[in-house]
Image (cartoon, rainbow, N blue to C red; front, side, top):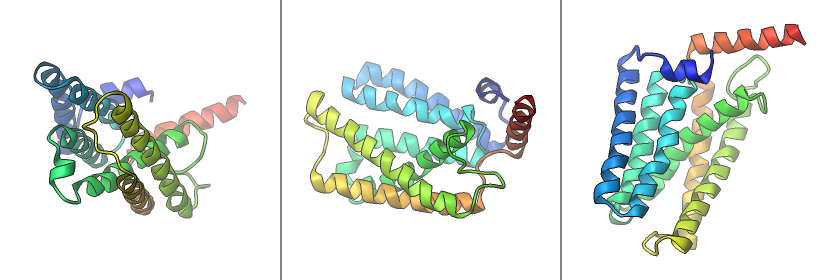
Length: 209
């Protein structure tokens, strides 16, 4: 099964329908933002779109897809509505939760690309996600902070970036990766049919080799 097949696969559960509805809202909201909001806010909302699409393209389970869409949209629009400054602890909470789910998505991509087996397979130890997910989350947190710094430096001085804020965000992002790694041990995020399809493709490739 290809990424295109998964992306075009009709939704079958309530969670999948809800996730698709949030994707539509995310796309429409970017268009609305382009009309009524500042260019920096439009850029922030547009940056959320790839993360909204990835769970569907990868054929992940509906509950995880829906969770990702909720967190990604919350993270993007919290910037627009300045919730990170006005609500104490909101910034750290979203860094914790959002970085965790993005680390899981990155782990799935690395596994599918046969770069590092993290999410499934007989050769994958239960300790593997516990070790690698926090590292992936810390890397994603560093990239997140770099994007914020670039925005502050070249786009708008309204973006809130301080040393203490950066370190705190990375710490909570790493903790989110640790919890995500623990959750991944007990709650697979890939559909059983998708796993079987991928296993068949790998077996076929091995036979050809």
